[in-house]
Image 1: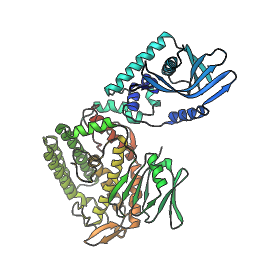
Image 2: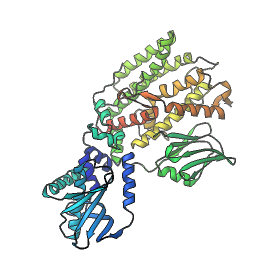
Image 3: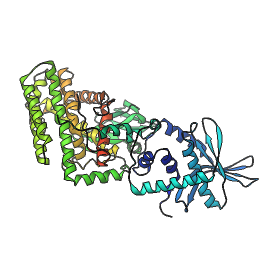
Image 4: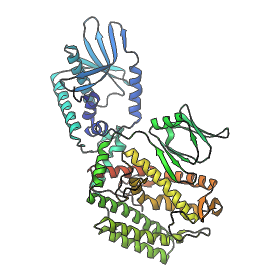
Length: 198
Length: 335
């Protein structure tokens, strides 16, 4: 299998292509309170590899891949209903959901992998939002699948091209841990600056 | 997060890791304890012992350890694995073969240095007129004008020399206390207290800009204004130029003029070499570290940040230029 695009890069790209580039092409990383919170949440989740609760078997930190789409990554949790044999991925997110679309994309990518690995259709999955404590059901309809495939393609091209997308400041920059490296507002100011030579 | 440089000046001190802290002991007494999370970098003067566990833990957290001699001569550093950012390093190397880009950068670094030197003179001129300071300020202005039109790197270096010479000629008139024999910049060895202080300040500054280079992802040994010289971190020295007047020269003047460092803080060695005594060294290092944390206004961004943060910001501006995001490097020019 050639170079597989990490699934985590997909939602990152959807959220902000510059962040995706800085993280996966330039190799930058920075912590902020949100990233630390996310890490703690995931550490708590990835405790036991396989458990059973009621009639549901739970698999944690499952390695996923898809040759067809050229992606790989880990699912926080994959559940299997004993009675119906229904299998579906569950993704854990801190907060109330910074962007529904990015999160759904990530879950769909996990489903595409599971479908290929298990040879069965996976029509839905769940996202668990830590601060509301609720699971949101996500249907993997055609629109979502097509969008996911598009983003996979865009990210693959970004990694190949080594072309950094243009940073441009928006309110979502404030929650981004790479803001002190990306410097979106500052870059805009620098583009207009000239040495005075006075 | 407020982070500090951990300086250890005590010969024979022993640094070890204790839980989430670094503990320094000497002669069975605890010198200091610092949480690892608050350490930005570690600087050791002379024979200070560090356990391997402490070194490993520091490196794991991305903290660099610099080794200086007892009197502050740079010996080397331990640094964590290079950041994965080879894209930046390729752009850095490519530009070093590009004479146009090299010239552009060299001129920008020199401009920052000269403009800031002139400002140091002008600040004193604002309080009281002085013919000598006025004349030197004008000579620096002339050098800057010549620099603007320099078409080759040796011309630019010539202008730098003219401006620097005018600056240090007037420098002794900025010294208001004590009876110091400053006749101009003397590096090797420093033959008067002022030069000893300047040299030490520049060593600490170069160390800090080397760290900034590493954080951003550069190879600190490949520069533009400073040619590749054995053992010299050329890029760090390039980035240092614009900071010498504000960060070191003004600090030295302040310490001397306020009599926080006096004649008896120095020792004289053979050949009329001056250096700080142990207590003088501690005072200087503390003052330097305190100054690094003071807040200044960034001339391009308009917001306020510490000197320390601005060192890194300037490194990131250079990175953006080399990666083609912006069209020129903007040096940090003080007001």
